[in-house]
Image 1 (cartoon, rainbow, N blue to C red):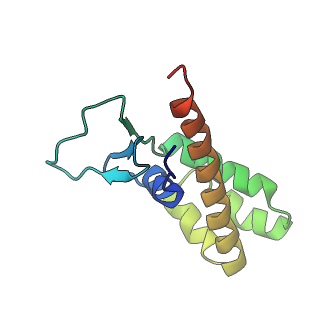
Image 2: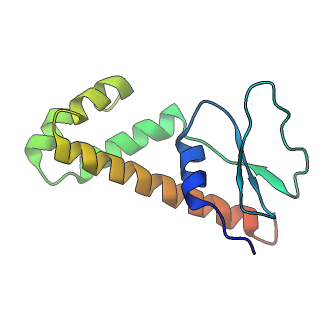
Length: 124
């Protein structure tokens, strides 16, 4: 079994700009730029899922709900439904901003690990 590029998988999962594929034989993440052909062998290449507006909003809500500080929660709770407003609100407090990026990366890692289990299961 190859060593999968978890950092590349996480970046691909969080990116919205282009499709990414996982080469199941090498573990490599392949970026597909506009106009470039997509890998065609479904036994070898799997398209890596990416975030959606809905899943991003769910993560923002979950992050706010788990914040220990009522002040921090109050400062950003109003912005959970607007990605831009949320980013702006979070950036006002460096410790909250760092916690947000850590939370977001952890969420992405969990999602990618779940996806990999599905992709690598004998039934897929």
